[in-house]
Image (cartoon, rainbow, N blue to C red; front, side, top):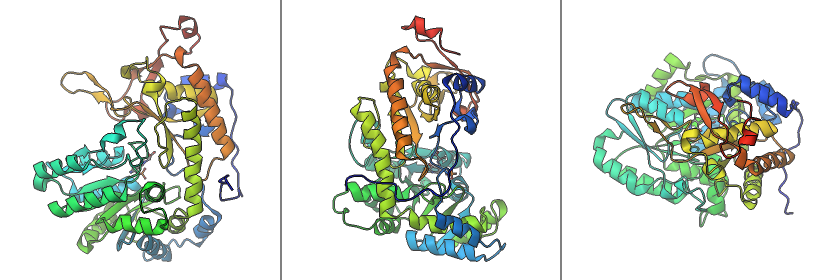
Length: 470
Ligand code: F0G
């Protein structure tokens, strides 16, 4: 059969509250044109993130009931530890309440003044934890990742020459190398096994440990199976095991490929490192057999990690994202190709070529998607990643102006995706009438979360401009 169906039936449903365009204009105006400030009740399709927003299976809900809340030595912890050991092949498993807590622990040990942390691309919390420790976080994405039109299948790869140069020039200041799989900030694009092997070789040569940011490891494994030569016949669990066989440890947000609403862990091979991490864990997260998690949540992760590696699930997951990307691409709407693992990325620079980066085309597009169809997405461009030069006060752009529509796992159906395509298409048709966005007030760091904005009229469409609420 050609149709790839959702490999599940729906047992429990949540109503979606429909809203009118006039209502949405009012909600967003009250939110100062910041989608993070909206009440989720006022959103029709919420694609702000795929993190912690997925649906759990009936087996996971059953596991929740099995959860044991003993403070120390809970059987839930042992089931969790067994699942992580089996799937990642890493011995020491330390639970944390989510991914950034694992990063915090890691950089308490590996970070510090004068240290340099290379990554294909740090996710923003990874960068924040490295920098908060005093270290410098450097990104070395491969050259293809910057070209949103290149169909290179492994745009998440590390730039190996840049990594080698970094290891050469920084010597012992590099305490570890990190690889983020998939590369979220780079478009949810995967890293190939051969690139990871080459990174491992460099790590061996320079005697530096390799850590994987493993949030979306199963999606990455599926994309390896799909596109890397020689990998097509393999089982996902074998590809995953090979990925982790190259690492000294990993940090994990179980809110993504753990298929749960909250949870995470750090796993390491070195027993001394594990001891040190556990000593720190107990101060900020909790005792070593629960970290920051409830026993029931540990059980849900143990089950989720097995489900995420099911072939039928990954096939459907990838098909549902490709479905949207292909339809937009066919209509000439600028999307990042090929489809990444967890999200659809629209290239706002090409969507609104006349809006300069300083007027935040990505934020303008995210606003339009909400007004048009109640879709909540997220700007990943100069608003989120740009900034202000400390000395000159000049605004700094980001490398790309993207809007991310992150697809929660097992949550929306194909008709929801048809609706998303229709809304985007309608916004595309009206693209010549849209002006940019300006900041009214915003904090210096992480301004996209709490900033207040104003919509700017489009100077080339004055008759439409006064119709814009701003
Ligand atoms: N690493 C990556 C690659 C991530 O995408 C995230 C979270 C984290 C680490 C941190 O994990 O949220 O459990 O603390 N990404 C979410 C997102 C927030 O929307 O992409 P966390």
